[in-house]
Length: 210
Image 1: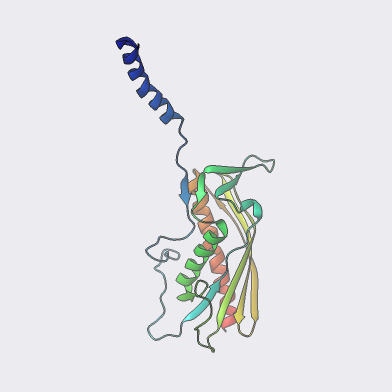
Image 2: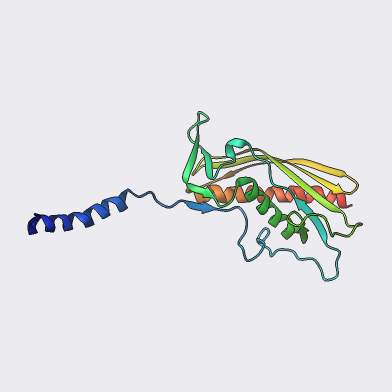
């Protein structure tokens, strides 16, 4: 038979065990996105997003998912650790969507904001006027790396192809930026890299529109 003293000791042990379990629980991961807020396209260089003029002919673009090296195509952010090429997966810092989609969505938002364009990627090209040119944008990340609290850098190849005539403009964006602070600084630097890539692509597209 369990005595009163034993029952009392067991009751005291329960809160202690619960506290220990709570202390051992893993913290919830934080999720990051490269795209703007859900309530609209981001500002461009501090200015509001462009909008097509009333009655103006829409500019159609099609931004494909961005190709990334397989080592980066993970839920976790991947950063450099030390000078010997070692990489580290940040289990508590994750992308809100697969990285190719994160980059695509951010790039699409930036280009739509700059150009007053409409991205047809989700709905496809069916239903567009036959005479309307569409600018198909493909990008490939050759290098995207960062050291937390230090720097972030990237090399991104891009191609703009005008349909239906197939005229092409291609280029490469290279960037190296400070990434001060913690993981937030890395994500902020990556957003600036996407913005710079959008600038270069918009310039390449302008050459095709002349």
